[in-house]
Image (cartoon, rainbow, N blue to C red; front, top):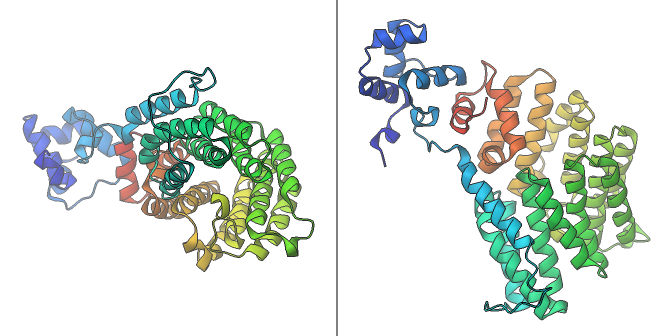
Length: 399
């Protein structure tokens, strides 16, 4: 490791200024600053908390901004991520099983495969997206082979492998490959009402981010009412979780489509089911419960442009016990939405505070998710943005 990685940013400015054989006065002149300003920066008396300033200094010193910050010069591993997504695409596009091509690879028993898929889901819920990208190609290939060898025991793990693949690809902003995964999931699930409902959760997500909100609402509502109990009070909590999550997806789609009234009605309906399920459960990887529904209500308000409603509810929801029980991925993704609401309300300071919390809970939500990077760029442009976010924006090359 280059020992300059261990230096404060001001000392790195001094180091690279020396390497470029520039005096403090020359650097100051090229930046349009005073010599005293440069001296204070190098001694750490003055902090560098604006992305534009960091970029200007890096340009004068002829180095990458990330190098100035002591970070990896490749922003967020974008090349590695693209290569990983391509490997997932290849795994999803393999048809050797249908063509009956022999495979020399061992077929995993159904129970072993189920454990591996569960591990990938857990890794996803901890928002460790680079690890999930690395794991999925092999897991998808194994799931397809096991299902071909033992359709009965292999079906549920295969559906779940496709579901987590679609969920990840939605996060990474690759809806076309996510569509392939969720289409495979729905096909594999056919005939199993529970698996169909589970796969429809990701189908709704993919349709919504692909700009087909009205279709997303229709599909998720159909799936929800297919699995809904006749009487809520007697419903199985796991199936209520699936039904309620599908209603939430339909509500988000309705809000995206501009149908705010329907969105609120669907959230209210989901809330009734959540009251029966309670917080602290994660049936079918939904995280469904009263707190999750309240987060969805806030997300609907953000989507509908009602920032005041969203912020008022946000201040209360994060004090619930149920908030801490939700997966890191779920909480951080929600906070990215709330940061957007604060920006709409012209409150960049609160947006920065919320985004800082999201980055603490799940760094990958900001570093690897396009939606997170976009919000980060907007927050970092404000002079009042937290220094840590300004540095992160510079490192990632956004802003």
